[in-house]
Amino acid sequence: MMEIKDIEKLAKLARIELSEAEKQAYLKDMSAILNYVDQIKEIVGTTSEEKKAGDLRNVTRLDESQDQDQDKARAIIAEFPRQERNYLKVKKILEN
Amino acid sequence: MIDLKNLTIKQAHESLLSGKYTAVDLAQAYLENIKTKDSKIHAYLEVFSDVLDQARESDKRIASKDRVTVLTGIPIAVKDNILIKGRIASSASKMLENYHATYDATVIKKLKEAGVIFLGRTNMDEFAMGGSTENSAFGVTHNPCDLERVAGGSSGGSAAAVAGDMALAALGSDTGGSIRQPASFCGLVGFKPTYGAVSRYGVMAMGSSFDQIGPFAKSTEDAQILFDFIAGSDIMDSTSVSPQSLALGIHKGLALGPIKIGIPKEVMKVEGMDEAVLANFNQSVEKLKKLGYEIQEVSLPNLPYSLAVYYTLIPAEVSSNMARFDGVRYGLHVEGANMTDDYFKSKQTGFGPEVKRRIILGTYILSSGYYDAYYNKANIVRDLIRADYKKAFEIVDVIITPTTPSPAFKIGEKINDPLKLYLEDIFTVPANLAGIPAVSIPSGFKPVGASKLPLGLQLLAASGNDKLLFTVAADFESK
Image 1 (cartoon, one colour):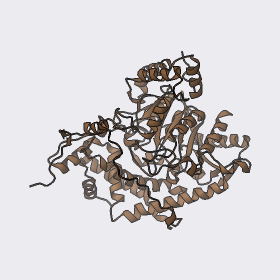
Image 2 (cartoon, rainbow over the protein chains, first blue to last red):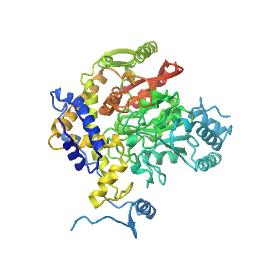
Image 3 (cartoon, helix red, strand yellow):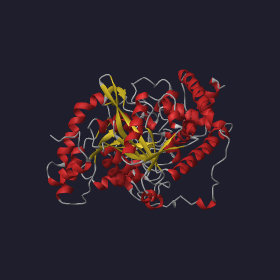
Image 4 (cartoon, chains in turn purple, green):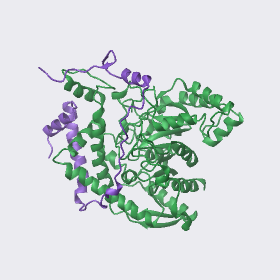
């Protein structure tokens, strides 16, 4: 059985702050949903088809700078929540 | 007055070419409908302020015979999780309430080239998570057929816009039924293409191995026109495939006699199916028989596990995809005590209940202690379901089911019980699990009080057989 402290642990891992009411609600929902999806455990089986090496292909494209469009860069910068002179501004990562 | 109710894309196109009316007239007619009707329906989150400018551009193109396509001057609505450069794309979330798209989704780029007019962005469940549009951070969408009922979801706004004659057609996205279910609830054609047939570049990722963009329309013909314009491989989506490699449009079995249609016996055993839905489904079967289709029973033994698999894999993919919304690079930023606290506060404020629920659930499913029991196991069963369909499509060309176990439900009826809402997706999620194409077409009504609630028939085919679905659907629709 899942407990409130488990929900708190998951929320911490997911970097989400939850209110007490939310924690209670999700505890209840999680139990019902997990109870339902547990039926997949009934199935005994392995992957139906062996993954053949021949099916593998490189799907990544070269990480080249294809787009020198300054307008695009400006559009992206304009969406920064906090910025200074075209830099994305963040708080310091290491605390004293 | 333009008769918007019975208007098709081809009719509108001919009228635009012949000069019966202009793209401005047509756009104006839709804008007026939106003005009078949408305060009650709430299909749109935003109606664009430059619609008439776009229409004037289309009129210019038509007048000078410059790159005119069947879609030039056709006004459509776009689900709010598909990016149009420079415009807000919020996914109906507070997280992105003020976010402006920095590029065009591939489907948008293609439609812009075709000369489409974008009327506005439509309401949806937040980040496409839900089946009723009740999870929108900006209020629910009402079903134009019965305002007390949901329009379905997650693409409920797109469905309501078309059903309410507030757009000629619309784009939605379908991860587990988010096009087909609202289409069924609103009496429309809703099409989910084969996974990979349409580029996902520029649609906000929910369940990346499930998501597909597809059309809403009043007729199969209109849906197919839109699909033909948006389909195709794209270097920006590594899972997109070329029509050739999927054999899109080529149905190998057609030469081998009448099209065979299968009814999965497992579907008929689904509990809680509305009697009117069942009766209507049986009528559809009789109709297909009369049209000359061979009907037979097929078996999909692992089908009963579809929902359990879906609601294991989806939260897992959701929790990964939602991690990008950290309040740092774009979207909502809420100040905390330090950098980590910024994350916690931004997500707490930016995400609604269903998004948080799925993130928490997905974090659990992907945690090291439960990964094998849930995530890996679900992937194994997903493969088994895929294999079931593959086997069935060796025997039949098309499989049919009802689109939903019941017609549109009342607003508020199911929102407090997430599991109950999940169970609504029983007939639609298997297509996304298997990556196969599926379409919902109007098949009748259930009279309830003063309303006639639309019902839908779902047709599914093997991967790449998208065109076959349009052929059978058009045949069903015309008779």
